[in-house]
Image (cartoon, rainbow, N blue to C red):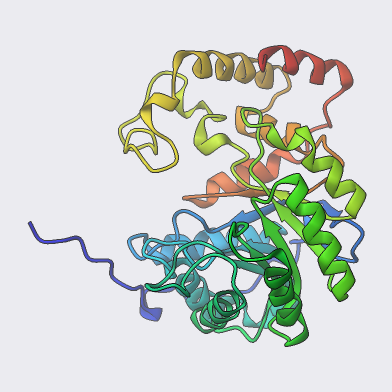
Length: 344
């Protein structure tokens, strides 16, 4: 059998002549990032999925264009997003060059380093050598002079926090990034990292954890630390990889993430208990006139410490759905209590 080959997208596959909507800021709500001066849209676009070499670049372009037209100004990447690794940054870079150069100062672009990227001892984790080299590679792939936010993607159990945070400080001072953040750090690691960065003169802007109705670990201390330290919070997997949509209410579609037995959502994750909860939540959402996915976003935004929610999309309509959900009223105390019963 011939091995699958990933074909790099080419500029010739891109649609031409993009002019952003003049109404792009009319409806989007923005929230302050911790104690910083930076505002982020309530929903941001993550390029974790659907921007690899095997994904049609025309679709990726359509998603990015529609997102920006709706006021989604923040685009989140990482060095290892693809597949293969680096592909999402290359795809974004080609689309940015074709469509968004004139709008660079209206965009917040972030990337990360921490997971395995190249062979040998310098291709992952949190050393100064790896973080700086990885960001240089990311900037080249995206065709950018700087990113707005650069993250340490995961804590390194072997490298001292002083070295990792020192590298982040250097990256800002060198002009490669305007702000820095951390992802997947524990409350204790977050507090210590914030202390080190503050002493260096480069405060930690953002923490990026996983958070949704089915995964509430950050309520057990991390959100309190972020409030105390003045750090913003931008969460990923708000829809629990699709479990908080109507996609799995009647079974596992063959073309779904669980149907394909993906790395992060497996068929055994779609068990009867999860489906029963999702059905109850979907019925509650319908009473409010919302979809389950829209309710999941509304529920997360009840937390004042949340700055933005990273959504993924395989087509523009998914961005439009979650954007439309922002117009619904905030949950009342009684509604939050009722949802809590479904999550027990």
